[in-house]
Length: 371
Image 1 (cartoon, one colour):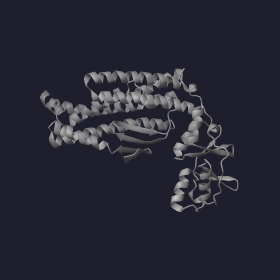
Image 2 (cartoon, helix red, strand yellow):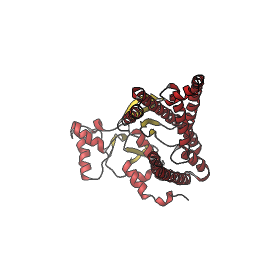
Image 3 (cartoon, rainbow, N blue to C red):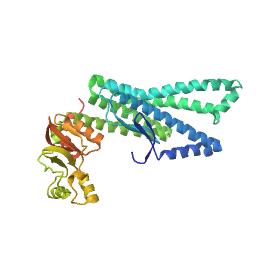
Image 4 (cartoon, rainbow, N blue to C red):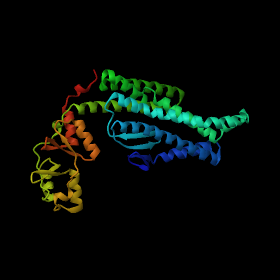
């Protein structure tokens, strides 16, 4: 994600923080130090509580990510934003039971944290209570270690409860979809969970409107839009699963030799609509040359550089009986816009992200509607 800085790495998962997170820390320092009149002590407390709260959010996302990795998913990174944390995974869970446990793991982490922090706070609170109720209340109303622990306990319980609301695409909504999918299939389950989530979002929005709670209205907007995006994403996934790779195959293109100059690829691109090339040497596929490779090679080396110096040799490959979803995932994981398609050991042609999109458009959208 752009404008994100790496801060840690856990189990191969890069943890990043978005630069706008600094605005949250400035706001916390201002709110506690200036608006509440607590000076530097308040400002330090505000920065501390927000930083620790986002540490809890990070652990929440790590809970999701580690369970996903247990089921075979690849997690690219976790990014901390002012609105919370976002884990970027390569794929969704293959089975409803896997999604159920993955979705539940995040709130479970918050509940465990709340119990642990509560256990740490109890002796301190009991010791302060020995000095009288007024002493205890004073410690809980001003920046102190006791207040920090109590606030973190409250925040973690709130995070767990809020995320367990059955409002798709939040954790509770994903748990609901997983339970429904075991009975009615993923597409129908997602459709129903989306409607329930948007219904709850509208209810939260109305409550926020009449109570003047702007943050509640923002949350409602986030849930409503997020649910719609998840529904469209699920439709796309189902569609990609049911269209064979052969539908995206680009046939009849011109192949290149690794010994030819780059000018050959440029000439073919100018005379035809072909922009990606398979590169063969003595009858064997040894590389691919994409539109970006041609442009970058021309800028760096000129038109006479041999194709072998600018072609890609680590391109992804797929079999013709795989689905468009398989092609898309392989291209995304490799960072390549081109994939070779074979049948057994025989090369059939190339497929690109553009040809995948066109093949999907040609499939009937009516087949991917809920029943």
